[in-house]
Length: 126
Ligand SMILES: [Zn+2]
Ligand SMILES: [Zn+2]
Image 1 (tube, rainbow, N blue to C red):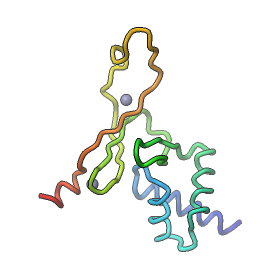
Image 2: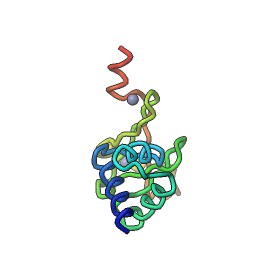
Image 3: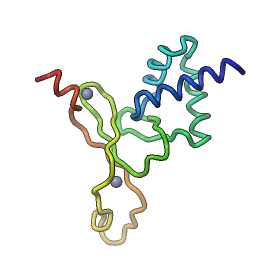
Image 4: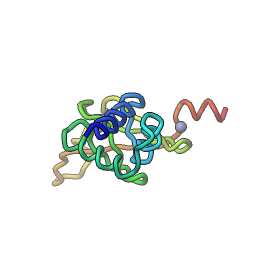
């Protein structure tokens, strides 16, 4: 029981430190720096637990698959850096859903990923 709490705390800490959507592999990589005993199955189990509790939510990335991010941030979009493959959160939304879909379609929700180069990768390449 004690060990589970330690692993879970480590995963929570990873999300607090990075504050952006993370893949299972990223959570594992960063989590192992905090608690060495983490492995893929403990990461999966804790991510599922935290998602069931509403602390995390899943987002579907078009090429990276399922990512996890903290809940409670309101509606926002994401930016995928093609260099470092990290996904960032973009605040707010400028999309007017009315008028985007043709007549007859009822838009209920949307998810937007922008693709490009993040500021730290721009600095590295210039
Ligand atoms: Zn980058
Ligand atoms: Zn939006």
